[in-house]
Amino acid sequence: MMVASETKGALDGLFVLDLSRILAGPTATQLLGDMGATVIKIENPKTGGDDTRSWGPNYARDHNGNATDLSAYFMAANRNKQSVAVDLSTEDGQAVVRQLAARADVVIENYKPGGLVKYGLDHDTLLKAHPGLVYCSISGFGQTGPNRDKPGYDLMAQGYGGIMSLTGDPDGTPTKVGVGIADVMCGMYATIGILAALRHRDQTGEGQHIDLSLVDAQMAWLINEGCNYLVSGNVPERRGNAHPNIVPYDAFPTSDGHVLVAVGNDSQFVRFCDAIGAPELGADPRYTTNLKRIENRVTLTQSLTPILSRMTKDELLAKMHAVKVPGGPIHDVAEALNSDQAQARGTVVAVEHDDVADGHVRLLANPLKFSATPVTYRRAPPRFGQDTEAVLATLLPQNTQENPD
Image (cartoon, rainbow, N blue to C red):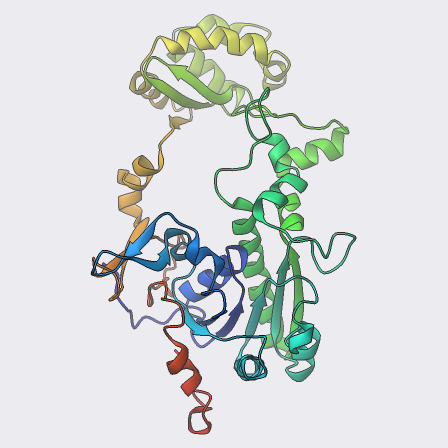
């Protein structure tokens, strides 16, 4: 079980004021917290805190078996933070947040553009008062453009940004990715931007405003399919699990389930065909190069499918592994998180939490493996407002030289 660590992280001493909720912003601030930053999460007492606290049905249970406000969704993006209950609609609440902002290195928020102006907590106001501040705004469509005032959720970003048109069965409904990937990737871009802005601040003393949107971020990771369109002018199609630029690269049925086949080059294709007992396919002039296999993907797939469907998953994977052709299983979540690789890499961590029945919560680990400044799990995801008194006490005159921890 992971407990509080004395190891200093790469961002030890950094103070982050987190005015965000749901997933994109909290993903960014959790990453910063994992690397050692002190993160103060402001939550609205009128709503019971971050929206995701009520996004069940899975909740950590207290010692009496009752559901807490620690939903699985909330816990996915809110460790290494302290929760402070503050009502921004009140003058007292605004004053508290301004005091925290005065001591912060980073402020991150995901209100609608202009939504914090009436509270005096917008980027223009705070950067004028604190020129060294790094202020990151996350919104659905960004601070400019014709859609700036529209709300944005992950589903809407995936729809507007094009990824849903590429995901799902070719003859089926456009499909979102199974998790909130637009939010998560936006949070990662936010983290990168914040770290770059902090380096600039440390070199020059100059802070800045980072304007980031879910839709901008999602369009940025259209990667090869986005560039396929820009180069050719042809709108990419949904191909299910197939790859637009590599063949065969797909999920194929076997006698007891599906296996991923990822043939990356021409020599691999020849070895693959030999391994499955179909050397004639490797020698067929229709399939000798990847370009030809793309042109003839339908006939190649029709030839491969009955051959592979007669094998078991383990049999096919063993044959591919023996000739060094990439391929793999399709795990469900339980199989993935309980795999030998996940266990060896510490993919799941247990972090102490006094309020829950087991005395700890199990979370997905940060994948970063630092050699000198390892990721730490100092705080479990907090109960709503649990740190309000302790954090606000640091604003008293006798404590103004101490950052909350």
